[in-house]
Length: 245
Image (cartoon, rainbow, N blue to C red; front, side, top):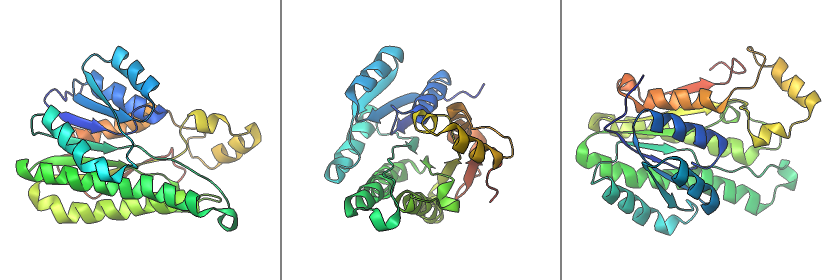
């Protein structure tokens, strides 16, 4: 088993399906974790289940508070943030001609701008230690596009380009930035897909099934660990062969 005993990790979006699986596998591997989200009830359940996890309710859309949030995390970790996992994100789907300005701007602000600002402030901390890793959770639609998701696809494609740029800027300081790009993963969202459309999607997947949240978590675990110390600027696709880069 991979041991993350001495690693301090910030995980955003910890209360969702994929976030919960990431949290579980990192905790099982002995990492010290600050888990964030906006749902206080779900955060309290995390606190009850994981005794060594620190929970912090934080809305990443509050851009003016991101610097303070990162400072607080850095203080908790005694000036040693090893890994940042940017998992928080939203969807607000609509066809382009019907998409409201708010639906566009909120998705871009949370999925892309907030991730940039958190990464920017965490990198400042990592530079002092000349070490660190940032893992951004993107999406298959950032590569392929998707009907009704121009905003979401743009935000996730932006994450990929941003991650490559950060990797180029800070590789010489031993800070690695990578992405994990899930395909269709079993979740509350995919559970709502009709049986007919589910079959259409599965027919496009080489492995003929949706993935499990644990499949994404395993990729995040690898990138968090020392096993990925010579990897930066890359995207690991977790989509069962629905898309090949």
